[in-house]
Image 1 (cartoon, helix red, strand yellow):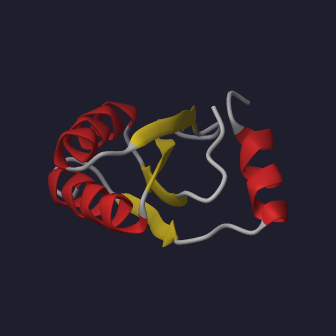
Image 2 (cartoon, helix red, strand yellow; image 1 turned 120 degrees about the vertical axis):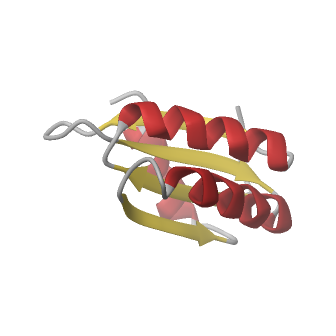
Image 3 (cartoon, one colour; image 1 turned 90 degrees about the vertical axis):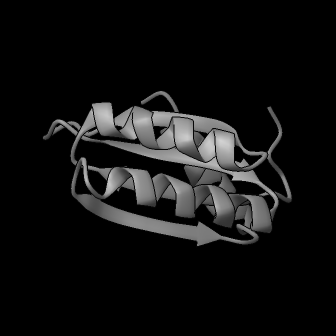
Length: 97
């Protein structure tokens, strides 16, 4: 899928199960597409990448974090409104790795 021009929201939790609960809340809260869920190689957690408009990604991120915080440690979260071309290439390289 081509995500060019879309914002990206990334959150990482220390629990894979909590990631799925959080991404479910995110996808119900706003119109976002889940770009990928990658398990952490050294731990039990995962990193979730979701795409959409800036406002949708921000709303989805808020919902995801609100649901995740009682369940797991949020190790990182961010929204990039307009990823640069090099950033897009780097993100694409990590999907399904």
